[in-house]
Structures are given as C-alpha cells and as structure tokens.
Figure 1: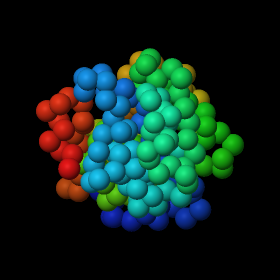
Figure 2 (figure 1 turned 135 degrees about the horizontal axis):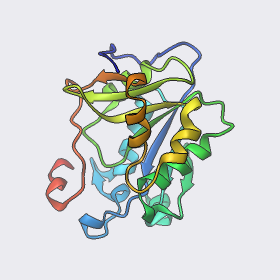
Figure 3 (figure 1 turned 120 degrees about the vertical axis):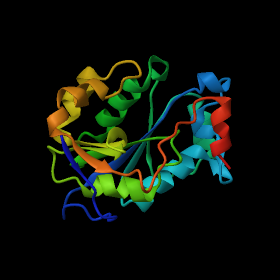
Figure 4 (figure 1 turned 90 degrees about the vertical axis):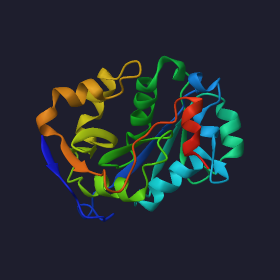
Length: 209
C-alpha cells in the first residue's frame, strides 16, 4: 500500500476527468427514520453541503444517489446541476447505492469516481481535493487516511468499477474489494484537514449546526 500526503490541489493529473459520486440514500434508521440527506447543516439539507464539497474540490460532474424519501430530497435540495440517481433498493445497504452510482457513470467519459458519503460533514474540500489530486488514470485506487487508517473519501478508477459493483453487498460497499487489493491502494493522509466522524445516532447531531 502506497502512503503519501498530497498538497492541497484540485488539479490532479492533467486531462483526468474525475466525477464526484455522493451516496445519500440512507434512511437514518438509528436517527428515528430521518433520512441523512435531509438533516439540516448550516441552514441547508446535508446533501447540499456534500455536493458543495465535491464542487469545491474540483469535481465538475456530480452524481447523487438518493433512496429514502427521494422525492422530498429532490424538492428541498438544490440538485439542479447534478445527475440524480434513485436507488429503489436502498434498504439493502450502501452496496446497492454504490452499484447504482457507478452504473450511472458508465459512458460519461469519467476516468474515475470520487465517492463521498453524505453523513460525514467533517470531511471538507481540502481532504476531497487531496484524494482527487492523487488520481493518475483509470487504474487508480486512492483512499483518504486518518493517522494511517483508511477512510473516506475514496477514489475508484474506471478499470475497477465492474469488480467493485460485483462485490458490493450490504453495507460493506467496496471494503472487500479494497482489502483484496491492499497493495494497489494509494493512501492520502487527511487527518490534518478533516474529521471523519459519521452522523449515525442522535448523539452525533451535535456535529451539525
């Protein structure tokens, strides 16, 4: 596994088209059925904040995967400039949303997908830009790291999409795929610019404002 700290840049390798892929389909079961996309953060739905992070980090194309109360999210959020993908199988877990998102990127010309989770508002443009900047081509596998431990966001070169989709089940997402290719993953340390907490329980809502 390659580990490095990449300067804060959104450039990456010239000519490499990296699409942002936001997974925002969860129903917030441990939050009493409040979809995470609709949680309010800085006066707007959390999904808006996450889209803004991907844009600020240099992702010109952003695909957003919705699931729970998708119609309400569409009505309340500002997703006009995004490609919105509705995942009817969202209750099966994050893996189904990852598959739907990667499938929606087929044929777009994107060389890689930079995957961000809607429930991690402590991860901002600086960390996302570092991961994006480490993309070299369609064979890239890049992950943010926090004190050397792999976390989010993650970047998947297009060469890996089919394999990831085939292995993404339940809430594991691409975990098994990345574990099997540990030595191919470039880790980009982001602990100095981001906090990788999740908004999973009522106690976590303290992180929103």
